[in-house]
Length: 222
Image (cartoon, rainbow, N blue to C red; front, side, top):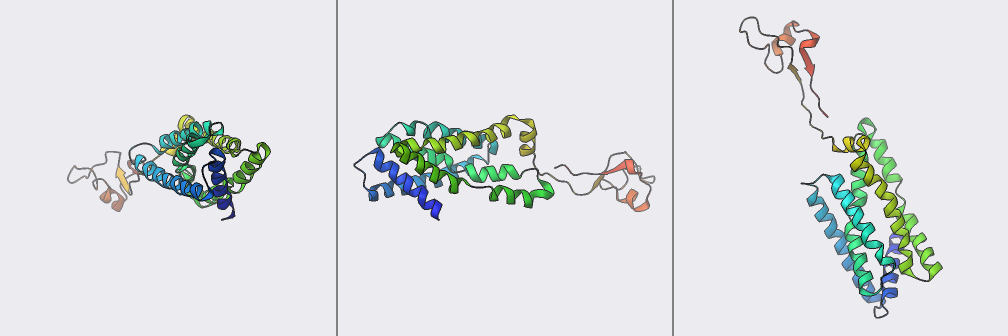
């Protein structure tokens, strides 16, 4: 809660610094609108992932964060505030998508891996205080936006990996399609009917012990 409060204060400070006409109350109302945009971005991102690979949506959203927070460092007034609104929209799916993509392919290590991923989250604890320090150093909250920009650029390295590095991309794209059972692949036939022994599961061959190890195999495509 403390770090969330720090984040809220920095947004309000940015709005007040961007235009003197905004009071604390008006800045808080704008923050509520920005959080609404954050929620909207998450719903839209989730919908897009039904039809587009999540890694593509991820790199697009993260690129949007970088593109719109960078000019917010120099632009003030309503333009700078609007840029932060759009940045929060694109920031919406970043963390949950990193968790989901990072857990793909961990197999039996999923519990430990998910624990490490969630436990390693430190943005809420680190970014707001650094942002505040940078803002105080230049007496400008707008300049402080360089801090989240640096972290967005660092996170973009992972987006590049999961989209263009095969060792990451292939694991992320793997779908869990599994067939349970065994099927006849050696062409063994029932001596009485001439049909494949036991059909797909090779029940007769397995029951009589006549099928060799090479004639049946377990199917499990992950």
